[in-house]
Amino acid sequence: MTAFDLQRDAFGRWTLTLADGTQHHGVIAVRAFPVSDAQGGAALMNSEGHEVVWIDQVSQLDPGLRAQVLQALNEREFLPEIVQLQAVSSFATPSTWTVQTNRGTTQFMLKGEEDIRRLTGTVLLVNDAHGVQYMIRDLAAMDKHSRKLLDRFL
Image (tube, rainbow, N blue to C red; front, side, top):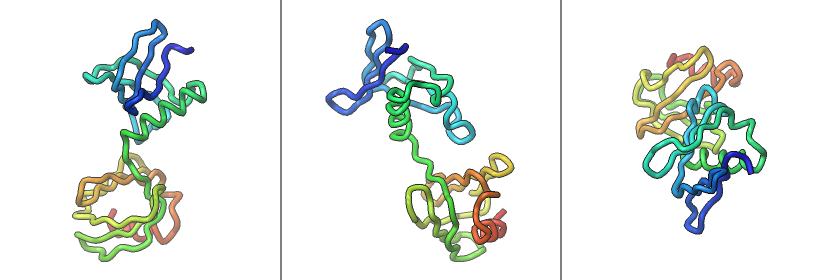
């Protein structure tokens, strides 16, 4: 066993077992930088919200343990990635967007242009009217139609 092991208990909660045998039940996994460095640092937090284990690089864990940690991270996070804009109801806000994400096709309402934030040169974060955040990981890699629609709002 490495410095720790992460398994589900009988109730479906994550249980962290340290190398010395100490167990922490109800553990949650949290990425340090979920948008800019998704495979980078992550923490395993106990039920009181205290960090128990720090992981420098999730990608460097053994494959079995990495799969468990990634599953725990993905259960907590919800950040769909927009891969294509299919339609926009209006170029004035509020407008309804129909998009293809890495989780399927969806529609959401954009209240205002200020709900589109540029994190880096090519990474955008879009907030819908219900507070759900969508990420555009690489604006330059999107198809021409999607970029043309987005240009009207940027």
